Length: 462
Image 1 (cartoon, one colour):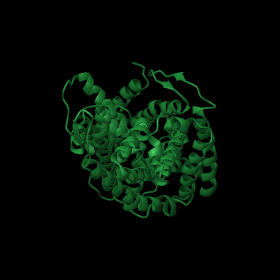
Image 2 (cartoon, one colour; image 1 turned 90 degrees about the vertical axis):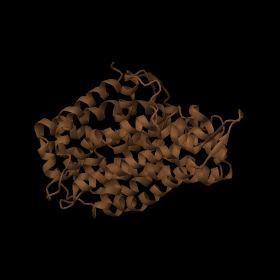
Image 3 (tube, one colour; image 1 turned 60 degrees about the vertical axis):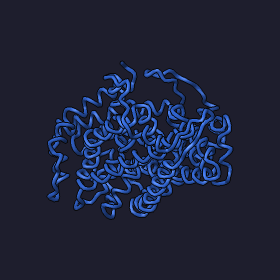
Image 4 (tube, helix red, strand yellow; image 1 turned 45 degrees about the vertical axis):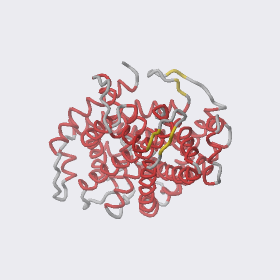
């Protein structure tokens, strides 16, 4: 195996891991789910799951990486040979994810360029987004630019590339998120009926629990939504945290590092809600909060910026540049998970492996881009959703492969290698692990049960 690189210290590790989790899932999915599932009720459920369910899986993946000092492809086999196929799945997931994530990253770059060049007002025209993604060449160009930047960062290595990029971008990213969140709270708008909505009203929608009409079924849906969101918020089940864990030096306080990652990831998810929900609610009411994903990012938010006036153009620039940064920190983690695995498997240089991986992922991404024109089709998925190429890849990776990987991980750590294998790694330098008993119960019983429920639910089998 090739010798392992390592982060220069805990700061580099925390910022890199947190940066990977600060992606599009937090920005365009978390606010929508919070608004849909009762605001503060969703936040409360999410927070409880973050310190139990999310903490368990995040801890497990990072500790597996540092204990084995191997990439995701070989780490599971190192713990027990019978589980080597988990490594294959863990390596395939980020490759599939990145093949369509880079397409969406290109969409974000398109909007950032539009606002930077003074064309932000054009983005609110009817059909603007649909016309762009269905055009044959422009999405390909932006996707290639996005992937080239990602590959250049990864090709420079762990310290000079990934860590240096994270240390530079993450402080700026946090400042931009906080600035937009504060600005959103200052907004106000009076509609044609004379009703005035303010950013603080939107904050109440986001943060104050709404128990009206609460039933066990609605609570269960909220629970499942929050649990699914944690995969996005913490970059779980994609081999990323295993790979990053393998770069953590043995003398680092792993417990402290994991706690900080958990804190920053949760903070960013909450701030994403502070950014988006008040602004959308002020100008569009509850109706504007009913869309997630591309509808929220590329249709509703540009309308919000246009409604603000001159300041909206500036805020639009800051917002979409911020989202480009957030998308890049995630795409870098995905590509690194792929590159590190194939570096170890084929014993080739990082630079060569990066560009070979780039070529393979871009080949699939081209098909994804053309899935809105040349290769357009629709299939009915088991969960009732009509899927195109991008949706199909998302369904297979997120709804099937990721839960299956984590269920296998729970069996491996909970019953074969035993939780002590993780606890011993966490306390190797005499650190105190306060959640030892909670971890053992969660990894053996609670988390695998919840993952099975999530798998059945998300695949539409019931």
